[in-house]
Length: 377
Image 1: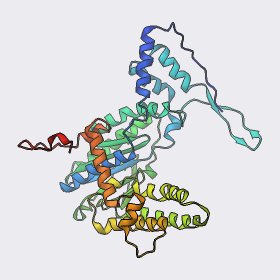
Image 2 (image 1 turned 60 degrees about the vertical axis):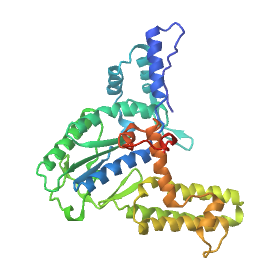
Image 3 (image 1 turned 45 degrees about the horizontal axis):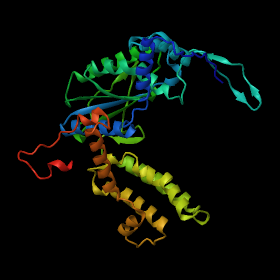
Image 4 (image 1 turned 60 degrees about the horizontal axis):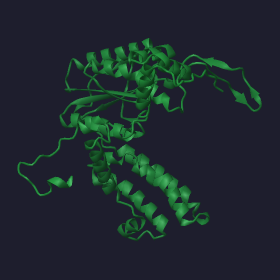
């Protein structure tokens, strides 16, 4: 249950307030940031890690765990941040009424507990809440980057990564100072870090795996993991993505085994829809990361796709996969991954994707005039 006050905006509201409302609504209209997703975040992150790996650097990827982040946002601090953005008057009152005056209760059967007022947190499921949370967390990125450490924040998923030469003596001090500053920022902003669930991955060549030290957060030494899960993708120390491919293949084969039991009860069109939801959607998630992987790694996913195609078409296991893919209008997995990269590139170059992807692209400029220059290739 929730209770909140309401502010009615009259036609006689001052022009200044109306202008603020229009600007704020324009920003909130981009609250979910079209073109931004976990996929673009992972493409940027893995691209950075691979570049540093190619340079021979060691990178420590730290995945911070923030406990119940959306539920403990302090209203006073958030309203202060909004005021610092230039919002005031009726607009700030409107946002204050959105945040405050709420309560919650527990219902078990026909019995309800007494309402308990909520003094912190942003309502999950609201279109405003992700935007307000991003505003609340914005200064954390500035703190991290002040130490020369890069970071990527996606909602309450905060990842920071620091690259350094394999025998650097300054790296432990810089990273520990950065983590201490992050912890201090969290405490000052009434957020809670969980060191026991914070994970660290060392990305480096095999010869550089033993760096001889581990980062420390709030007095807890963070062990280096062999692999970590970042936004749903398993990353390993060599960025081979073998663990990710094996995990996806295992889950999809398990889903196909369950879907087979539905075959006698569903029409082909309905069965195709179920396969798209449970199987091909898993193969499609972040498949842009599979570009450039060895064929022996990608072949495991191609086998899954081939099995799904044979299941939908009723073909036997000896049937060739190419005609089946054409019948289903499916691209082979390797071509799907290449197509995804091309789509991301096109969107980034045409202002339809994140700026952090556009900044990584260097357009090719030939030394002489070519006939294909006007074909957007």
